[in-house]
Length: 185
Image (cartoon, rainbow, N blue to C red; front, side):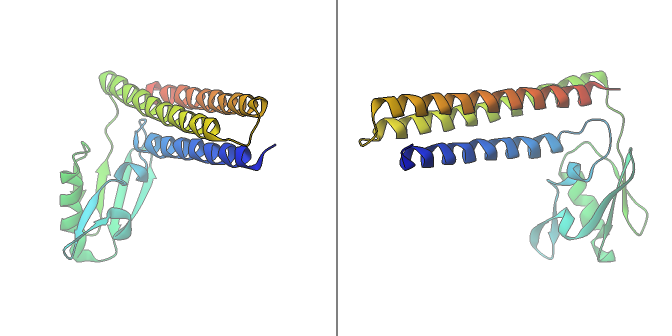
């Protein structure tokens, strides 16, 4: 096979892999009833004048399925962390016990579960759009090739479509699992 075509196929697969990776990260942020440190991954703390991710100023953990704790490495950061969690608008009510921040994760209501399932569907759809745009880009690149025969181009387009179909199936399976996790009481 022409090495230019192979390069196009490899870079397309790489683009589709990164879309899947992005989807996995997005799904981690969608809480499914049990506490996870990833729920606080978007929290930015004012650390001596600069916005810093919570994980870089405190140890974030989950002692049980309904509780998240954030124990700062510097005691004077407790108030800043508490304020940052409130400002992140995650729907959590942090409690300060003088040594760490404790967050009780409330159980999800049926309506909230449906909203989270919709959010997961939206993220999956975004990933599919990324996959399709990678396919479209690859097909454009193949059409531009001048030293490849028409048969090679057609075969490469078929390979790209096969890649697209495989990744779309992976996204659908991943979404089904995530929806089941969200809707499980």
